[in-house]
Image (cartoon, rainbow, N blue to C red; front, side, top):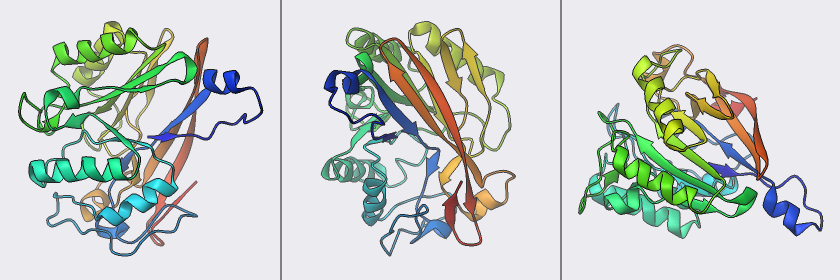
Length: 275
């Protein structure tokens, strides 16, 4: 997730704290065709990591330079590949984020770290945390690294309650949903609606690798999939619509929120991200 530069940088500091924008991206992976490439207008370091197998993803730490240039200061690391290199890989990812000045959500070296929300002061307070689908995102335990399982309703309610005690807004970032499908499955939709009933305001999801629809539920919302952002492999190219994605901009204040989507496409001929 990218904390957007405030559009109003005048002298009114209070107003700056009360109004903010957050930008969410779809899936990111710097291997296979994205090795050594970057989004339009950014300089990418050479030597991005190659995946060691078709469905195994690792990333050279040099990729952090691209994320820093994008001002991506919150990383959702809850996904079905975060444990591809085991707990050592997870620990290294968290360390790289800390060294880059970024926060992580959704995974940790134990369940308490995995469910810990990121709290922002802006817009009356914004709390974010990540969850991941049960089959692929290996769950954290009392003394085991991993993700916050999207079925761990007790921990999820704990995180929502913690955010609600401090913040105006509660956002859940979910790595879930059926891959390469154009609509969410009924059980995925039901789960996200349950999160809203539990106290979340907005659910932003990725993992399907294709853009999906959104749903408004009163003053709350679910964005079912942002598709791919920096992600391009043979496995992806075998599926329809995986070169498309959405950057989701949320504008929040204590009084309300709005959103604006920006469509993007992976230009596979030149391996760039374009409008």
